[in-house]
Figure 1 (cartoon, rainbow, N blue to C red):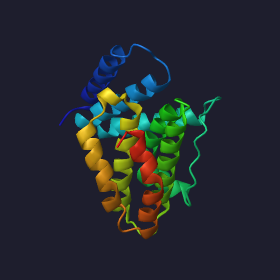
Figure 2: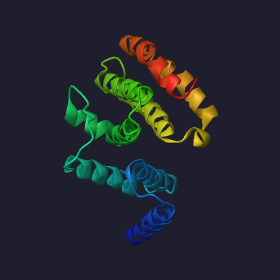
Figure 3: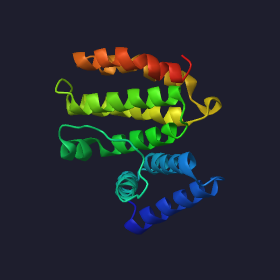
Figure 4: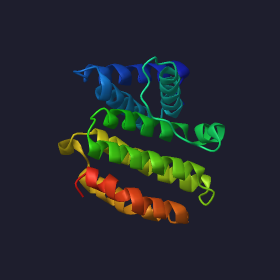
Length: 191
């Protein structure tokens, strides 16, 4: 069992390594940095630190004077944030980065992911585990949307996009929603 001090040292090392890789410390690159740190924390069994990072990010964004214009409409914010805060934080970061591209295809993609996120969280037909899995898929798709086309994991992304309707299949309205917004999501990636 590693000590608290060892966990802090491991987390600090990851942060410094990832920060050293960043050339342009603005906008999307900073979001990517945060997500890389989060992924490395999780892959190194630093789950608590990963959650702490996302909590800090949400708190910082809540206090920003120039906040991005992404608002979710959840029926019960407290439950949504408690159960799915990490996934929602990741999706929000992706939408912020993608919205900064300011073209119609990016706006359609972001709108589709936002609607899917709201639909999943608000669904009465999906249980918490199904919601978590669906939000993880949406989070992955959003993260891939931030990447330049040459850096995307195309095979995994195609499989994930093909699997989303199955993840949503317990919710009839969500399948209908996917059929409405899914074409915008897949078109963003050129599929």
